[in-house]
Image (cartoon, rainbow, N blue to C red; front, side):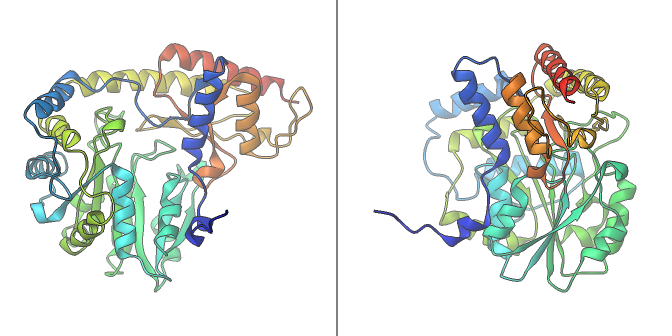
Length: 402
């Protein structure tokens, strides 16, 4: 017997980052010497003081249902974090906690979009943004960027993309997949445009906030630059990247009460509350010792420098040096049309990625998944030794193309 699936599923594709990571995992289980550079998670363990807080919560019996969108203690920690790090002032009624950053975005789009509504998304983008918009009944409007403009949209491109149907713009800085970071000036030029359109809301994905390599520049989020813009900005963050808590599944946001109320209503009929234990761990993550971040950032910076140097030395590849996050996004344009030693043609970045995996056991994610080809994403959230080995295999693969 067959079952008819929802037509909504026809609008979307499986997550390419998850698919490539899973494929690499399966090949590794078969005994192949696969190095995965496709996973978007730090290789560091969750800090001990955060794990201890979770164990203490279990021992206290904090294992029951909680408020749908977060315990008061976590909301208070989030409010303090926004004020401390971003100079943003929120009340508890303006805070929502969900089981991960992705559900925050999903809840916001499902709760606000109607058929015909448009959401502006700069490319390259995190793979889930357009599909979430489609599932919510909206229409993604993609603004394509390039390596020449540092993968960032301009005020001119933004204004050209706005229509009477535009409801949201999604910004992500530091960026997944490019590692690029918007400066205060660049955000202010976007604000000048957005202030002309008071019905457009802004979702800013700040999940990589603490992973900045230029110590002289403090992280800037768009809501802190203009009070009026902040009244229509949903500022999203989480504990997965900065605290190496990807499996704990805690995302959060601050924003307009009307949207937060709608997100709470939706979550009450879907996932309900995030894990109670994870919430107490997140309280400690936000309130507790932050000193470990400095050492982690130094390790990421060393890895970034090594990958940047080696990838740029590969025949036919070029890339920018990322300013944040733990990704690098090289162009493979010069290799399109070339052949592998066994005669396979590299027609696009997906061919590049799949042939690299098949012949050199290196897993990356092709740029098509992020809405911009011919590029590919490397995650350097693994050891320097593995990165050197992986980059040498990539260089070898490029050298062998004819």
